[in-house]
Amino acid sequence: MKPAEAIRFDNSRAQAGGWDQPATYRRSVTAGELDLTHGAILYLEDITVSFDGFVALNKLSRTIDAGELRCVIGPNGAGKTTMMDVITGKTRPDAGTVFFGQRIDLTKLSEAEIAHAGIGRKFQKPTIFEQQTVFENLELAMKADKRVRTTLLARLAADERDRIAETLAKVRLADASDRTAGLLSHGQKQWLEIGMLLMQEPLLLLLDEPVAGMSDEETERTAELFQSLAGQRSLVVVEHDMAFIEKIARKVTVLHEGSVIAEGPMGEVQNDPRVIEVYLGR
Ligand SMILES: Nc1ncnc2c1ncn2[C@@H]1O[C@H](COP(=O)(O)OP(=O)(O)O)[C@@H](O)[C@H]1O
Ligand SMILES: [Mg+2]
Image 1 (tube, rainbow, N blue to C red):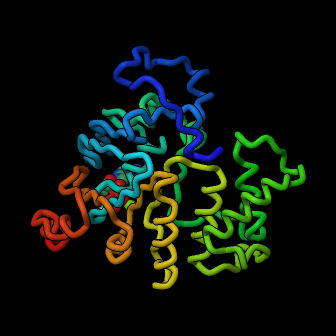
Image 2: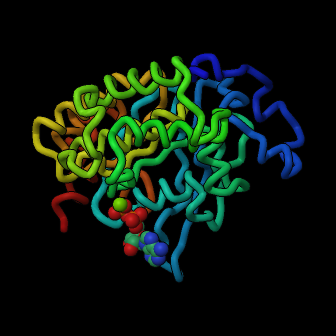
């Protein structure tokens, strides 16, 4: 299912009463049921996370639009990764809500349910199958998707092969299809993992420091990849590489001590006195 087809318009969360759906219904939530009535795909509302009294996220509220490519920057310890942990269900907020579309309360779903609902996350260290070929990695990712009714032993249907070929081209690994994944360059491994995420057709992709360790050339290619993905999907990209951010950024959110201190176009936030102070004051 293409994300565009997956969008179903429905009552807004504000209009719809009873959000408390029974657990069985929640478990069956799929991307196809996502309600994007108001054009936003993700709502963080007053999220607070503390670790033994240390406040990592402090009443953080943010909205990500459907199809948006949002960059999140901020010094180490700002809470960027914690924010992604909250969205993906790895960390439960002490207070606040996270809604995916108008009606799916992510704080009530397990990590697996959140992934199934259409949120993909790329960690810094790629989790590819090093012994398998590039093609096989994408095949495994597709078959791990519970929405696809195939078994690991079933032969690939033509349209499944097409999907893999399409993804290979997208992540620039078409020529490396038969290579053992463990032999890829660092950047190629990162692309493969992004490809594996794409096989699951996420509506929202979270990428934590995706170009760390990449060559300039690989970083450039990754910028193009993200730009081509935006629109069809929503992306939230956390990255320290400012040249990369500058290349891809539309709206940049600057986090510091768990709160937003600036937000807007890169040129604007770069010149924001508070942002300069936070980056230079350490
Ligand atoms: N599981 C945890 N236990 C205790 N402290 C944590 C935990 N996760 C993150 N922190 C702390 O929360 C703050 C924010 O961390 P993090 O979200 O990783 O920041 P960033 O990704 O912006 O560098 C840091 O001070 C970090 O030490
Ligand atoms: Mg981090």
